[in-house]
Length: 258
Image 1 (cartoon, rainbow, N blue to C red):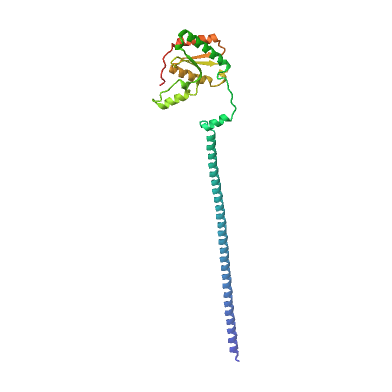
Image 2 (spheres, rainbow, N blue to C red; image 1 turned 90 degrees about the vertical axis):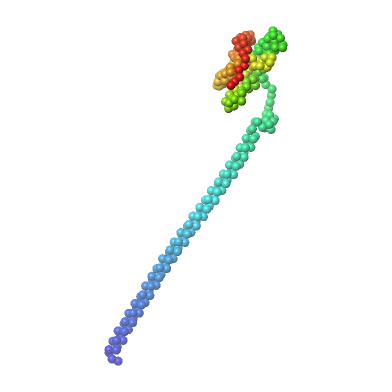
């Protein structure tokens, strides 16, 4: 074989082998890039799956928190309803204006009789009774006066609710819970003299004088004289004080509170 052909064959072999090497190297590079891209896609998918898993977990925790909050609110609402019901029941049980409660309270406690007038005030009561007996003997029984004790001021003082009812109601509230120790009424049932006994325990209450101021003003407004008898006053002095007070007042006509 000629040498030239051998050389040409050798060159061609080298070229073919070189081209094959380049081709194979390209294939290897493509596989490497494909593998890298696959790894990137896989990592991206894993990251997305992790993110979604965390999101689902967070949503589940949020849902559980909301359910717990709803449960707490429902429990609080239930307790509020039960407490309100208990308050209503207690209010009914403690409502002293209900006749059934009044009966239950009366039946559930120990009761005993007691003096309506204490020992000190009894002396005033008996002195006033003797004064009335003397008056009856001198003026005749057809003009007989009467004596009442522990009389509510609302029983003999009236307000005119036809005019400015709100003001009248407030005035009535100021004295309706107050009482006078004794009240002298004439043969026609009109109040003639209110008597207050300021015994040894009179000043024990801090508001005693304030309550007396209201009593004095109300009685002054309606024209009923008020006699205040201090502690340790003798029976004779009491009778004299009654005579003097009635002489001074001269049985003045009643005013209408306006």
